[in-house]
Image (cartoon, rainbow, N blue to C red; front, side, top):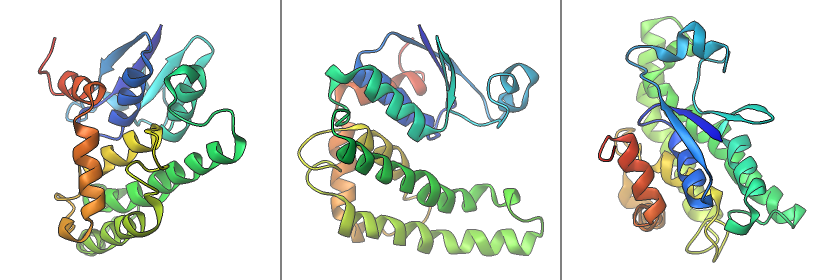
Length: 209
């Protein structure tokens, strides 16, 4: 059985949603960042990066959201979460998810985790001040160039949608003017209505046992 390590209100939600959408047999292990569970020796043996998500499989451990999402889509092809039989289309999905991982999430992290890059308080505050612009610019590009249809890749819901939805949860807290990205916000609303998404969120917010 697959085992997903996650913390609430993190990017791990995307992997949680994907597992639920795929109908996978999995268990979850809840981590507390407040208690710094991610830095404890037991978890560092699973993921030395001290981050979430981590997915324990029968072949080993996977980290990084794009890798986990690709694994889920390829392991459960019947769920149709990516065009796994078309190398180009699958690469397009990977390109989108890589942008979310390497650019959008990093821009967001400057608001709360500036200490990863700098030590000076003034520099951290300067990074925080820039977040509404950098995150806003990234989502403006997604709004303008990357949403191919009702879903990210067009007419079919994929792993990209779960990932975009997850990061879009943080827009208001990042100070982004969401009135400028109506398609992204409508996408967020539609994804939130999916049963698998509701179930994953409910578990992570302790609304279900």
